[in-house]
Image 1 (cartoon, rainbow, N blue to C red):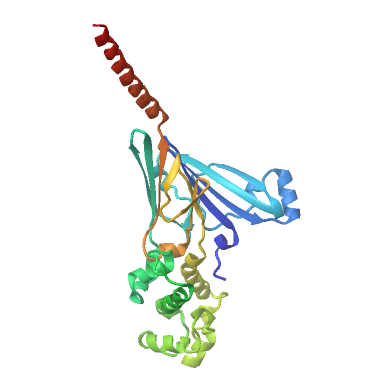
Image 2: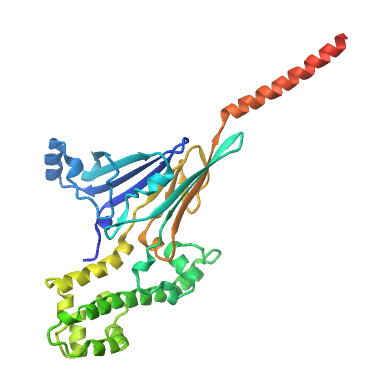
Length: 348
């Protein structure tokens, strides 16, 4: 029930850097459409608007779009927009999380090197770790946290498969406890803030707050994952009362609101928008990405935004053909001048 539409729909983002410093951004999303619906909307020519927009997209600034139907009834809609600079492009980042546009800062540096011009593009997406009240660094070293969520720094470099597996298995418990504690805290804080809505609570608000640790231990004594806990039954067993069942019933306004609070945290783990980048000329440094056929591929997931800002950067070089021509002309002129002077002195 916590899955966002970005998990159901294949969403991609492609950034194109041009030699003149302008930038272009494309976002696309694909879905599977039934044959009946495909034929009916395709005939009307309105298929671009027939697909539900994924919750992780905000394309207000993208006024160009087209839709195609591919193999297997796959419908892909693509939006694109060109911006005069990288700075202006990042102001209209088309990605959002929990209905809030992701913030990023981008810049393009251009360095003239005579025979070639070097371009370095960097985009930094702001961390969203403050979505969680309890920081993962309370449970593990910052390098371990960063590696778990982003792969950097590479803490298993040089290890054998068995050694890497053991190291990873030792890291996993901290993630489970961190997430369980955070989700528990969301529920606990929500109940406390809405305590006046509970008819005939078994304990006072102050008494409930004092039971924070005892209740957490009771909830998780037989479970490694808090999402597997039947909260209504467990709280009934702990308090001998059904007073708190309202918070776990989606038919109740409080239950619906609490479910949304939990979903806002878990949506981060479902957010997955592959980021591709095209640079002018030849790519000489792809940063943390992988370059294939001139396109750089980056994994861009919500988890990578948890420990710190996520940096996408690449450097490319454009050969200045005219510089070679000018250099060759200078060399030819120098050689011609040398022979001319030699011939002139010989005659005299």
